[in-house]
Length: 281
Image (tube, rainbow, N blue to C red):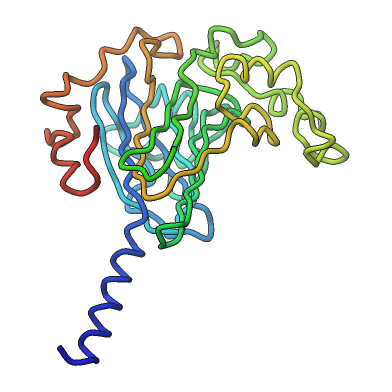
């Protein structure tokens, strides 16, 4: 093998390894359809989808490159015209007037899964969390798959809408606003004189979120118990991970048994997903 060819081969391997990043698998265990939204941060490479429909008991996977950062959330109560494709959602709407969010984020209140995927290198760490800082609309859980080291599971499996204070309720109880969104006070928004970890403290409203979902962000500086790290992992994001379906809908039936696996839109099973990423336990 010539030195030139060997150098080119090594360069190609590094490009492939560095570009892979992580695979996300989104699963809908709710008893109703969820329309996930995906937003890449300005410094990250965009994806081939920014929003799609996910029926109950189905899943969909996609890959992101190394150094990708962004957020994923679920929209509920969506109505899109079959002809024009235009429409909107009752919660988590990105105001794009389409199934694709096209670079727009979730309108609060919405439960958010946030990720910063490491750059290439075995010792670099991913950072991830589930945040209720912008409020809550449905249960969500994030799990690391094929991980290296102790990578915790995080999320909010509770139906916060059922315990949401009256003054924070949104959409006839379909979602629960944050105190910042509802009142705009600096002490709730961690802004102005309250714009630091030492001055912005938990409120009685953020404590409601924290008591229901101990590993989720309940306010802006809730870092100590809410930020998780992992290396070399793919990520499973589950809507309605428990028997509670959220938003007042009927209980989820969940995906089929593990011998067949949850079905994606084409009828492929999780075993097909495993061909493109690490095996799913």
